[in-house]
Image (cartoon, rainbow, N blue to C red; front, side):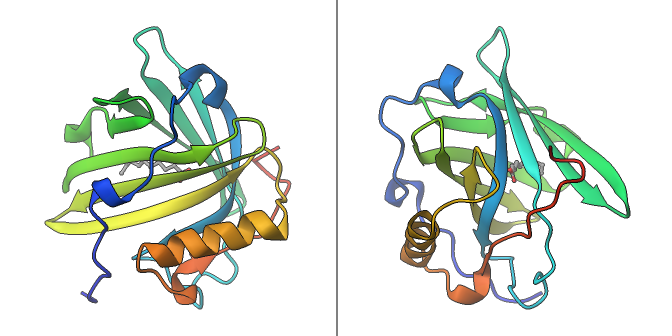
Length: 174
Ligand code: DKA
């Protein structure tokens, strides 16, 4: 087991002010991905996936990711439960995920109609993993937005090695 870059305390991770859960709904393409368990060399062919957020009656989200794997479209569905402040969530039904002791989600920043950055932290088998996603409403984002994402990743202790920009595809995610 390799050493991991320590996850930042949540207090150091910004939160989108006045988060609007209704506006955040819908499909987001994962245009950028960075985390303490990601490696650019091993993931150079990593294909783009998409994650859709749908609000439920109880203000939780049903979160569905669609990925191309072995020529098939895999769908992953989970529930995000609202936490103590808008824009922060916990994984629902955590007992269904063996080894996962906690899972926290925080929307760092979004304009709802173009781009979002989201922070995810999980404790799995007593090890703390974190990742951030650069979400786009479209598969391409400007160089400036990508560079902002890189700066944010680095501010959390990650290096270029931990940051990937998945390859846009058409299968499964359109
Ligand atoms: C994304 O990558 C969304 C990630 C959601 C992660 C939830 C995983 C919970 C099961 C361990 O766009």
